[in-house]
Image 1 (cartoon, one colour):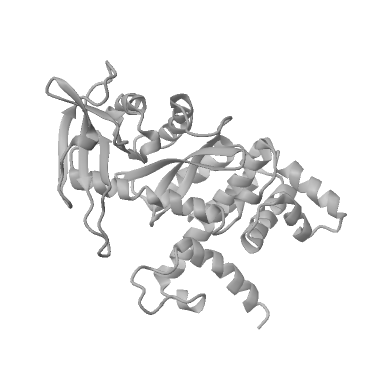
Image 2 (spheres, helix red, strand yellow):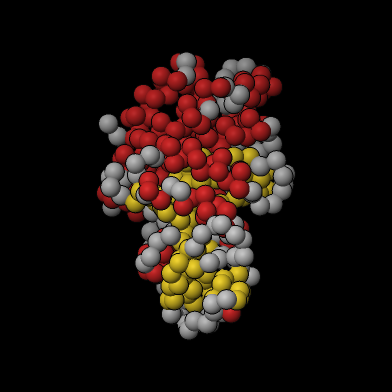
Length: 351
């Protein structure tokens, strides 16, 4: 059974017939109208009732306990994993945080096609970076969900904490690995003295992998491998920044490759916000906002899979422009192709 077929059967098992219809309408509306703002969704919701009642109907739906991540989303994630990857594949998971106004979300996602598929997320009750307890709360359910699969977790400098690396090392026997970029102020022990990693010398384009290093002055956290890398010039522009990447992997090229996939979640966040669903315009309490993100996750995943299917068939030029003079990189993601297919299908109904 394909993912879309499983999705249809899954929602029918979890929701009542009327709730299934509401879900399908909302998924359609957020894709077409590019918004998750409840007041705007109410304007387009096709129920023959007062506008205020439409808003209350949507709000009630968004408080359903059946829409919890473990009950509703995790079974879909397992099916997605089965369809996209073999059990022997390495899964690259990306940990990141996004914030707008007073909303602060920590999310873990699965790297796929230069984008990311959301797996689990948590609202933070404060502004700024997450702490170790919050990071564990997001990571642990996903490790259980993907038990037996080789996982490599990657994150940027915000997650440089040595304590997260130390906690993940206990999962190494379960094929759990990590690739975390470090701040240049991180300390490393060389001989009997500590130095900032920024003092380590490396030439442009050079990889320097230091094995079994004592990182930071914190006791009893063990040793780690540290990749020091200075990127080559990009489009004739000099690159001054160096990468310092902490890992329990021992291949420099693999560490670089894994970390490069981290940008997939940045692209996904853009799709969630100004690039697709305008999530930052949503004004809802935490429960409703959590379920709005769930709806986006479902819509985003379906659009991405449909877009990739269209690309595989080589018919995307019937939906949108695929070429642009002087442009070398691809013009549209699978998500955007899939999202555009909705408009194409609607317009086609009028011909």
